[in-house]
Length: 252
View 1 (cartoon, rainbow, N blue to C red):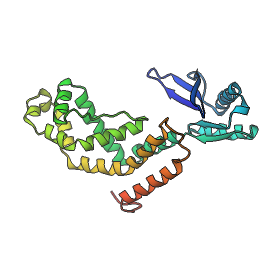
View 2 (view 1 turned 90 degrees about the vertical axis):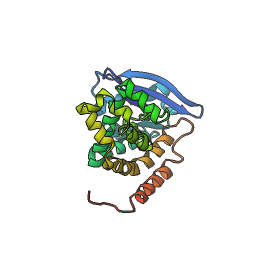
View 3 (view 1 turned 60 degrees about the horizontal axis):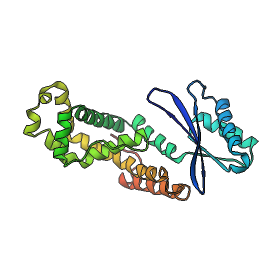
């Protein structure tokens, strides 16, 4: 299995791992910062990993679903007839969530507003204390398996704390703060009290929440995902369809 990622210093790293009946074992990491991610380079990286383990020990190769990896798949499966390539299920679902945010205006706008509210609050210790007082210790930000999953999990937290949040921005505690009269504070207050935001959060979660449920399953280390990924995705699609009243497309 190959797992590519970028660290905080924008360095590209690719981890190679092996999964068997005994679990997942880390093999090695490769710094790919100076390596052009062309098909030839990807093939070479994967070929080296297969040789390291021994081709006779490898049945399946799991990578992300980027175009260069898909092209590498075709080349490797032509020359190594015993290997089978599978795209990472978690990465595929993450790409769907990315498309939601980037290609659906209501998702893009709602996530941006959600980030503005959470960033505004969490950049001020006084507001964090006020938030936790009104929400009884609950937070608005919850990390997810991927960046795009995190965006929708944050919307879930906002939705779950709608009442306390609206109470905060109408409370005497808020009105006595310096930021309440600042332009940024007024904008965030107006967002939090806008009924359209809360309506749009529900719309976004109707589409994203079923997929995040599947993402949690496939990203778990407890058991292999292949047994249930197809059934999980079928159920997710049916749930999304039901959430929108089986209406395939509607005007905004």
